[in-house]
Image (cartoon, rainbow, N blue to C red; front, side, top):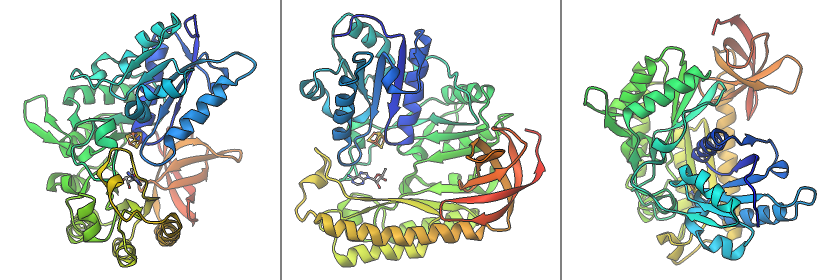
Length: 444
Ligand code: 5AD
Ligand code: SF4
């Protein structure tokens, strides 16, 4: 039992970018309470495990982390909070299984973390997995983080109910944040040094809201408004659903200067039978037609995807169809996963779960093809002159690492500092990164 308020904390985030965003907001919230962040969980009075539930063993990882924290020898055990999607999905099961856990807080309730910490400091246990109607965002302190790139959640939750996916259960229904809250947060991020903002949402392109004049806007309207924000150089967004990819957003890729030529548009499978069983509500041909329209608007756009192999009942021919759609699209990068049955989702109940060894084999074949495409995409940028936003130090002296407009990592020697946009020529290309030579220094 803990009987004092923590002075230091550490937030460890697993999973998606939205969890990274939530982790940053929790840190700001705790800092506003006078606590200070430490880099290692081993040194903190309070450890927040910000968990992910999207694929297998995520929960197991949490329990082994908790075990490690309890055994921490030198400083006694810390106050332990389990946040994120495992907290939402497992709730009271967590302290039943791991009595050392003091706080369980879901992704829609973490604005209440300070009260929960106070409860735990009095020796109690606090559990909150509500999805309150009032938004947590309104109760969070203003953004104060530094750094050239920032995430900004504009939309949360999902109403699409793909049959494999836990998100509708852990993150709740689709909600769009208000226009002015987003613009204000973007301004605060830019004031703190952000040059690039990535708009986040589980279905980010379903974002909708009214602008200051009462006009209904979509994500393209938001991108156009952010394009006018002085000091902001780059806008990105993720993750998009094919069904919400409308003409306005496609046109924005041709017209909005700061909108980067990158689109993460998961297709999941290349088989229409599997897509129907997944409840994806798009087909392979509607997806391919969409990609064509996007490329017509922005020919150099980098297309990224997500794939699941071994969805229940997936035959060899259906898996081959996935390889075929990959070949047809030509991805710049992609994520691919073995299907993982998630408790409570319809697909977990389906017959004909695919054997693990077959899933392994399919995943390897798919990844080999995707890696080939990624290397080809990187090689195609050889000799190009482009801009790189410097994000962090590299391993060698004088080396910095940044991102190209197409989200490739670029290493270069430069006298410019982190946060600067520099013009480079791409001089070498590997599977995972590029090397650039600076051609001119920008004032940024
Ligand atoms: N099993 C495997 N992969 C999954 N994803 C989502 N749910 C599952 C699951 N049950 C993948 C999808 C999604 C990405 C974020 O994770 O490809 O787009
Ligand atoms: Fe994982 Fe999904 Fe939760 Fe993100 S929203 S942390 S991907 S389960």
